[in-house]
Length: 487
Image (cartoon, rainbow, N blue to C red; front, side, top):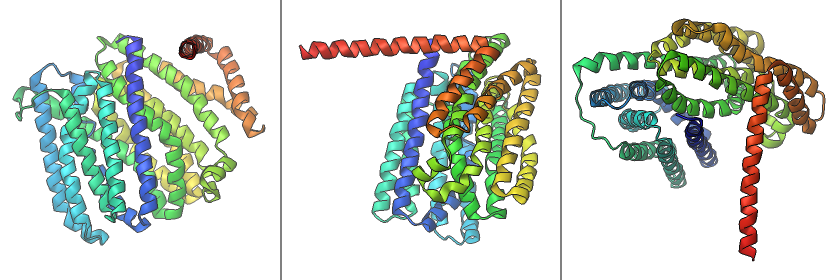
């Protein structure tokens, strides 16, 4: 895949991820105006079960097809059949668990909400295979458009149902509409008649990969949610509200980029012919991402202060500002580490990803408990930055490079050099007026890159020059058209 094709694929994937998240945010804002907090509480309980069950469907069978390819129909049909069987078992388990869950939480309607979610699990299981096929074929435009249309349908359904007084059922109806549309559209683009059969020669390979991918998803799920559990249990819902607000704010960009990198990067890495090219490709991706992400997160820290938070969201959210710097550290390293996870999955080693995530989980929980005990949400955020940021990064790359027989030192330098370069400009820009902070930081950061990482600086120059030329060309073209139409 050439650079132009890779860039085009990345833009389509970023477009799909950004549009989907913005529509989800819009839907939640509209429902927040129409529903009561207690109604949100009911659906939040249901989503706990959905999120856990969905770990076993999304990103497992589809990722295997990205790794293995879609040329052999035996793998396609076996993967599809196994994915549907997993979805069926999970759906039946969810149905069996629903009465117990309803009694435990004291929400009778939870039984029927989970019936909706059980049906959606079947759709999700099949759709994950379709996504894997489209990703492997690099059909990112079709995938992005399908997701966007399904997301729009979800917004209309949830909002319409809420206006009609359907309460928390609005979420269930909207989610079901989303999965029906996503299943239909992605399936139409795949253009393959799947057969329900399992080839005994490839069954073990499919199951082994899916088991490793599920372990990775489970470990990541624990690491992504145990801080919320600790805060909610030990510090209360108000503290959890402040922390969740800051977490969503600081990780929004990395979430979008991780989705884009996961789809484009894994397919790209999987199709490289040998390990030498894979290592070179990962070096370039990590280098470019780190040198661009570090100043972006630094600027976020400098610009998003108490005054800005108070002006945009209200003074009630000011306590959340204390945790933002630490969560930004985590967000940066989470973005960088995702590229290693992507490479390991593309190499057919999701079990290594599972090992990395499951190993760090107990240490993270202990750190969060100590952090909450000693420093409240600030203590938890510091633990997140240190354990899931710095410590996890070193451990991730140590294990990954050992498995791949690559240089650990090379990748750790790429991970840590840009944020270290950004430290001095941050300290210098802290004491100047907010409006001048971005300009002063950018100038000093570029000087630091010029001195410490000259090659990267010259790449910035070439990229900026190319961008200016393209913008100038577009502007001249528009100007000529305007003059021509005027005459």
